[in-house]
Amino acid sequence: MTRCVALLSGGLDSMLAIRVMQEQGIEVESLNFKTMFTCCQDTSAQAARALGTNITVIGQEDDYLDLVRAPQYGYGKGANPCVDCRIYMFERAYKFMEAVDAQFIISGEVVGQRPMSQKRSDLKVISTNSGLEDLLLRPLSAKLLPPTKPERDGLVDRERLYDFQGRSRKGLIRLAREFGFTEDMIPTPSTGCALTEPEFGNKVHDLIKIQLNDTRWDYDALNVGRHFRFNEATKVILGRNHKENTQLEYMHRMEDATSTSFLEPISFKGPNALVTGPSTDDALEYAAGLIHRYGHSVDGEDNIVQVMQAETEFNLIAQPTDRSAQDKTIASAVNLRPVGS
Ligand code: SF4
Image (cartoon, rainbow, N blue to C red; front, side):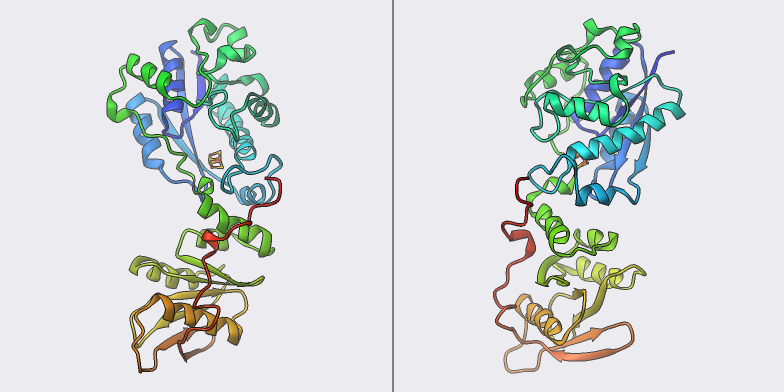
């Protein structure tokens, strides 16, 4: 029995690539790669169910952040190091392929569809640097690429593969309909990866460029709240709603937290805040000023904020400082991207 492993994101391309293999009687084991920046595991599980394949989810390892910090092949529009990330995924998929006794790997990549990672030259780099070489087959664009080993060995009929290229989805949607995909099986395009979003990317680039000793906790914290940079070592994170206010309190209690103070308004309604890095008096005043700015402070009264630190608790009167009254969030900053990327 011929068996392949498919990287299944849950998007249309990966679903079609799987169906092309199934049409040739090839058994497909699906693999979904999850990072701390991706969502949508439900979507990939639903896609696997619709296609009748098993799905295994594998997560990033600790070294994934190294490639986010310094990708060999650069970033896309946000902080997405797609070529490096694909190499990383396929290296792990290769091990999985051997473990499940499959003969090759497929992916839904389409030549020229994504400027960052699907140029013809990128596809070659990904195949080579992942160690897969010609064990990596892209069924949707295979006719535009040199024959892979499974094609040469007769495991896959090259004549029944495709030559899609470019960004248009029209041909892919037509093929999906020919395969009998119902409308609800055709997902709208989305990477499901926060790194591709420019605003989130700004927060990542800020950590990479400015806060040189960043940790995994710092990256997790990027998913929560408004982020303001106070200085090279210190940042303030404000909750945007009740859920985030609770999350910030929870995150502050985590063992690996880099936050040094948790601030909560106690005499007026307003956001909770975390200070990451040194909680100097100036940094705390700035954080309290941000709470004042984004909260419902009461005119003519002391607007009190409670500060909780590892060993101590005390109160501050929140009032806007020159900076806290006008600073913009890191997400809306400009020029955070590395030069040349
Ligand atoms: S979009 Fe995100 S998960 Fe996908 S290849 Fe790029 S960095 Fe990796």
